[in-house]
Each structure stands twice: as C-alpha cells, then as structure tokens.
Picture 1 (cartoon, rainbow, N blue to C red):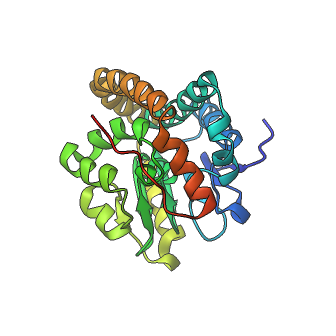
Picture 2: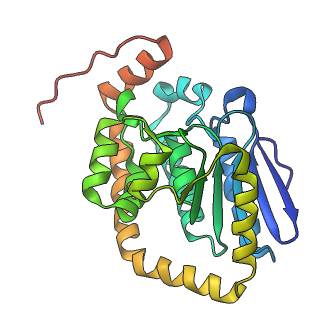
Length: 262
C-alpha cells in the first residue's frame, strides 16, 4: 500500500509507523485514520515482532485536523455514523493488534492523539508532554475512547479526565497508568530500542497468545462499551452544543452553550 499521511518502515522485524503531517502537527484526518488501520492490519499479518508509533516534527498528534472539523456541521447522519465507526475501528484495531505496540511520544498528544498514544501496550513520553481528552470543550462526547480509558485507569479517574477536558502532563499520565515511562528527550530513541530488543527476545507466539488472552477477558465489556459509545457519538453530533462548539472553536471565540434541561 502507498501511504500519504504516515511513513511505514520495516527494519529487522520492527514495523515503525510515523504520523507524517508535521506541518499540521500530525492532526488526524479520515485518510490518516484509514492508513493507520491498514498499516496495523498489515503488521498483524506480517512477520514483524513489534510495532512502534511516533510522530514527525514537534508533536505526536494534535487531535482532529481543523479541515475535518470545518465540515462537521454539514454532514449527514450517515456520514457522522461512518466517522464514529471508523474511529472505533482504529482504536479497536490498535487494542487488539496481536503484536506488542510502543508509542514514543516526544510532544503533545491531544484528544485522538492521546487515545492513540496511551492505548499502546507501552507508552514512553518525554517530560512535560501534554495529553488531554478535550472533546467536551467543543461540545462533543469522548465516546469511543471512554470504554478503553475506563479499562485502563478505572471509572473515577476517567471521569476526571473526560468531564474536565483538562490537559495533563506525562508525569501525571504515568501516575495514572497511561504512560509507562517518562524518558528524557535525548534518551527516547535509545529507550525505545531497548524495549524493542526486550520484546523481540521473547517468544512471538507467547506474546501473541498473551495479547489474545487479555483481549478475550475484556471482550464483553468492550463490545457493550463501544456499542454504547457509537450511540452516544451519533446523538452528540445532532445537538446545539456540538454545532456551537465546533463553530466557536473554528471562529476562535467562547461558545454559547444551550442550557440543559436533562
């Protein structure tokens, strides 16, 4: 496959997937999401031992691209549903990938970027790197990622991050269990390679079997959680606050929220 928004390299049984839109802070587009899915599907069928994710330029991923946001309010219900299903497929493909995954986070990873970075089996991040599930700031619901986040850190901590939409550092992310290690910038590549070597020394079949076991243990929860998330996602996209939040974000003004009666 020819990739446009990511760079995929295979060296010594390691698949490196680099988000490659540095001029847009590696913001996600539908095309990038499909390419990430394809690159992971290829990895699952290949003889690679480990999959590593990184970002080109100064950040890991700034979230959804502004161009994608600009068309949100004009989409049909079917198009909104397709968007949500694509995002669910991206995160579930990552979660269920039979090969160990590592994210090397050298800068901010926001919204969908936070999900991509922290859903890997191992997340290495430089000091002070910023994370955040910021969807509520624009009247949206961080629906799909919520099911995975509750599994990772528990409901109470997930409520804090999802309801406030606040940014948090790699140090806090490590305390919460979303980041495996905080690594000085000059050591990030070396530490990633050390972890790759450690994983490659293990039995590929045992690693795959272990990941299948973990996936099976959480399947019932995820099936229900993602189904509920898709419904919540679709409903949220029909609301005044979603339309207003997107418009306010693009116009760089404060949103005027509708008073809720529920």
